[in-house]
Length: 428
Image (cartoon, rainbow, N blue to C red; front, side, top):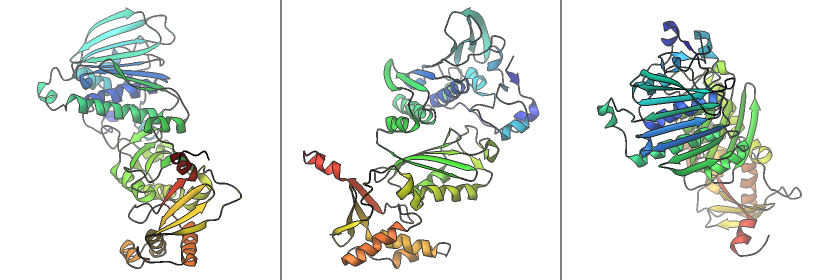
């Protein structure tokens, strides 16, 4: 009724390649189907890292009875119908090869009740062939059970990683989709033990739940691009989660850009929204890479929103007393770090990196600008007067990117005075 088989000319335009290489790939495809079906709750259960069992259950709209046999056929999809649709993709899935690929390498059972039906249907598929279909009592939604992955391809099964590794991949994948869909509840069981239980939340709350840190929001909108980010700076190990139109993206180039713009010691979740026709996810078989219609423009707009001084002074929700917005210089540590206070925060500035960043922004575009900026900057170990320290901090306030040096190192570290009082057992 809704599922159709894509014509050959459309399939030929879709990035080729096998979708299923590991249990995490199976979970990814099934979770995406659940989200495309408008599920508000997705439950995943795996056994032996997903090698023995993968079960994904949702409360989405379900599959129409006339379509339940078709969904395992090659090229079967309800998401697109023509080449034109490939340039306006708003759903996660569109290839029409996920369930077909899974069914070809496993023992697959699909149970689904369409929201307008009083009962559901169950189909069993083995090695790509439907072996049975029957009615079944169940709530509205879909349940897909995948057993014995690669049972008919022993050579490929040998290439699967250890159980712990495969389980970790599944956990990381669920965390990614949970970040992208905060209004959806996600539950993950592994070997009958609950691993994750994330209730619907706001975008910021979900990011903090998943990453286990208090994060500061950054928001901006320029021309065709809307950006939302949640960051914590100066962590021991930086990590970025990038989403484009709610789809997780693992582009190395984009991650490198974020490290240079926000700093490699930054924990961040970044959401980009732009018109579907400007984004091409059809460049990689697993839809993890992305190609932008105006990539340079996109990066320039991102840099202006993520790295600009607006981020520090106007966009971040900082707890700064309105009556004290100027910095008070407290001193210099080891002739290297400037200590200053503003409101309820202490700032530790690297004097060399402020100078280096300022030089770099003046020289930007020139050959070897970063190296020249470093060589001509104020050095660590150089004693400064209070006037010189104040001038450097004022210089920092006017930087285009006041957060990181040209190489991605953090320029400053900020500490709330309340944290110091708590460590000393005092109330603030």
